[in-house]
Image (cartoon, rainbow, N blue to C red; front, side):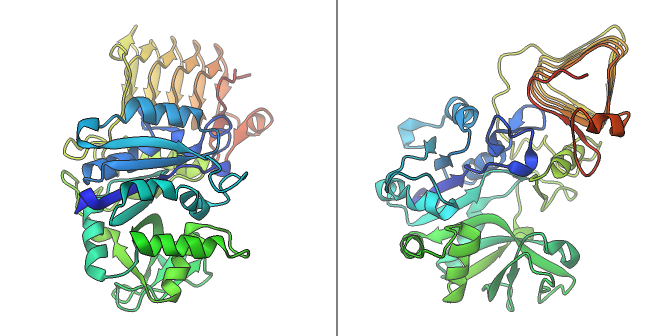
Length: 403
């Protein structure tokens, strides 16, 4: 069945709420968990699930994303498998993508070339494991034209998302955008379904919906706001309960984990989920690994009494007489004698000078912290120099030098 599926990954988002991490890159290209990028999670899920013809639709500041996909995600051309970035091409006129639905509509040549029976349209910037083959089976069995992956959350939290209303647990009765009073589930009144942004369509049904939407001048041409409600309106949409999805090698603790990392605080919190002894999200599941290309680097090195506790330390890092606690270090981070890094996320090539202190901070690629500098110690001072999130996380953008 999976051989008749085309995967389309929507990776053109600007990610304004993740600034300054998205100042110079698309949101799906933001590094995560040491050696990964956000897009690696959806691509790993699709590939492990047997969907191995995948088009990644890009637009906003896509160079690093295009390069990452092209150099890392090389499947077997011998068997017709591929992951390919597809930039906006203005095939339907001199305009860029006007929304996620318009992105697919402008790229229907990809669908015509492959002629799949089904199309899996997945987002590119969430942290989770999922076997899409199980969702595909649910879609086929439902007979619906569209199936939306839904995750159960507490009703009081659901107002921040698109909410799925269903009376029988299978067919979608209504799709509500950030409702003040989210509906409960038939089997759990205190929970609501929220959309994960992952959809599976019967091909012709999606083509027809995109063509109709393209002619609607009032439409935002968005998959969640326009296309899915159109399927719901004609009784042709089903919901897939993500909690029923079982991934090989998962633990009881990380079963059903899904994190939307759309803000600095949620991005930071997702990293804290990785580093405990029994992590909320386990990066070390060898039966369903999150694939990445860590590069040709030597192993991490600890010298002069340098230590790291409750932390992820990537290849190429050198911790020299410094202390790292509750942190995630991407490749090639160098921390000098007497420095302390606590509860922080340091991306590729960060340099922390001797005696410096970094607490509850995110330092983007190639940030330099001079000897003796303090970040995250005095938030009132930091707000005058750096970006500080509502949750008190200090963020330095790519290549900045701390003051």
